[in-house]
Structures are given as C-alpha cells and as structure tokens.
Amino acid sequence: MQPKSGRLARMFSALSGAVLVAAALAAPASAQSDQGGVAIPRYSDPKSRIEKPDLPRNRVFKWATGDDYPPFHYIDAEGQPTGFAVDLARAICEELKIACTLQAWRWDALMDTIEKRQADVILAMARPTPQLRQRFLMTDRVHQTPARFVARSDKAVPDATPEALKGRTVAVVKGSAHEAFLKAYFPDATPKPYDRADAARAAVKAGEADLAFGDAVSLAFWLNGTGSEDCCRFVGGPYVDARYFGEGVGALVSPADETLRQAIDYALRRLDENGTYAEIYLKHFPVGIW
Image (cartoon, rainbow, N blue to C red):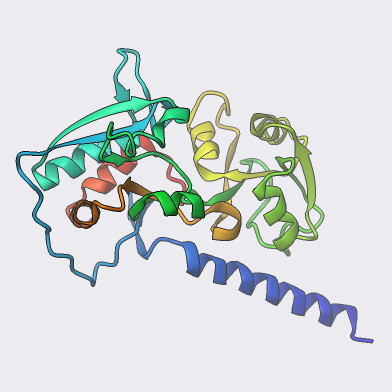
C-alpha cells in the first residue's frame, strides 16, 4: 500500500495543478496591471492588432442593458440607467464615434430586444450558454467574475490553498457552483453551507466560520460597504474555472451584424490601451476583485 504521506503529496500536487490549469484557461488574456493596489484585468492580447471596421454613419445604434444588477447595470435615483456596463457602452460609442442610444430593460425582456429590433447590442451580465451562442454573436470579454475567499482580518489565515484550509470551516451557499468547486479542490476544508450569500458573509463576520467562499464581485461590494464594518479581507485567489464559474461575458449582437461585433472588439482594444477601461473598472470596483 502507498504511504499516506505520499498519497497526500500526490493529491495536493494534482489539486494545485488543476487550479492552475483552470486559471490558464479562463483567466484574463494578458498580465494584469496594477493601479493603486487594485489589479486591472486585461482581456485583450496587446500583441494582436484589429483594423477598425467601417460602420454606417447614418445609423443610430441602440444598446440594451439590464435594470437591476448593481454595480453592473441598474437604475439610479434619477431614474437613469447607470453602472459598469452603461459607462462601458458609452465609452465604446465615443471611441467608434457613432451615435448611440441606451435603454435599460427588465431581465425577462432583455434577451428578446435584438430579435424584436428594439436593440442592436445587449451589454449585460448574461452568461454565454450554448443556447445564447446560438442566438447571438458575442464580442471579446468585457468582464469575468472570479471566485474568492474572505476571512476576518484578525484571523491568521495566511493563504487559501488546500493545505492551508485543511480543517478550517468555509461558509458557502448551499448547492452553488462555489460549493462544488470547494469540495472538488479543497477536500480537507469543512464546508458550512448557507441558504444565502449574505448569511455566509455574516457567518465569517461573526466568527462562526473561518472563511467564506463566493463570487468576488459580491464579496468586494460587501467589503467596500458598511455592512462588513471593515471586518474582513480577501485571502488567496482569484480562482477561475469556466466549468464552474463561466467564461466571462461580452456584448451580444445579431448573427447578421458581424461588422458591428468586430467594431466593438476594436473599441474594447483601444479602451484597454488608452486606460479608459481601467478608469471605468476602478470607478465601479474600487476594492478590485482580482
């Protein structure tokens, strides 16, 4: 029989390799830059070049986004659409020097706007499922949400590795992709499932769990808000795996609008190069998620 220590070493090596492979497959396309301690993802390859396609100047391009998913897209106190996706859509139109309108839609109506000719582009946090890809062309990624751990700042949790989390309790949403990932890659941690993400976060704040594991956007929103009372910090990560957390989102256009898709990709590349994407990102994610 193989010695127990040898089996554990082999298992740890395999787990670490699996996490690294997942990161290589689904992480931002190039090295992240750092501004004020916040990592800015870069989804475009700086070595590649895209020619700017010609778009008709007499066309007004209609953009659609969601109405209730802060900080990505929501309605502000004055009844206007705002958020990360809204600012990015406006920046793309400005970069392409095209006339655009933008309207927020309820989620149950949003995905039908292109087919009903109510929109030319949908920019929202719609996960690109196989069904969605059959209906639309998708641009390059504009955002991807990794998974992260958080722990109390006064807790001695140096890192989030399978070895470091052995025997520690981790609050996680019951039945979620995060729980499945935790069980697969951190088998010696002790999952503590909760029905809601806010309950999992509260458990860490109260010291009822050593860490919480969930999507980095929600956790960053909480860390930066008043609800956390500055109790906690990110530990380890980020963790990405398309099988569990998706491959990231892009803008959606009609299959007949290939030129528009290429133009948006060109604009995204330019916004990445000139720093506009970083400005928009820091405005809506001041804590950062990577």
